Length: 186
Image (tube, rainbow, N blue to C red; front, side):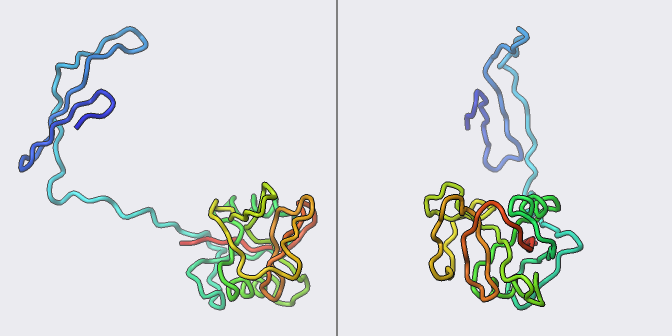
């Protein structure tokens, strides 16, 4: 195999790999002789790739059974702007909640505002280009489950999304304050 000036010969059935590299000149002017072979020991049959990193959510994140998802959530019952809510969620490894079903959207609203004192909560969905292409704060495309009547109308500056107590989505401006939930997917 050859990559970026390195030549490695893999010997099938032999526990080892021999690599050499082309002669090169470092920025300092020093030369590296490419005639040297460097033995590399194979890890053998017991080699493995470690499991993917398992994310651990901060202690204040809890399960919301009604959301019917494996994610955990942290409620914030302080009215704040969407950008500040996003920053807060990211500060502990989470992100603004991204409801993927109508059931999850309704459950999130009830979790954040159990007394229904505020009809809307911020969610991690936006259209920063005002081009009708909604994305999540994690960079994934998003197609709302159910928009509220007349939305998204994307009046000038309506780039963020809210969820109403009935689980419907609405677009809104970059000003104003709402409660919100952070999400952590373990």
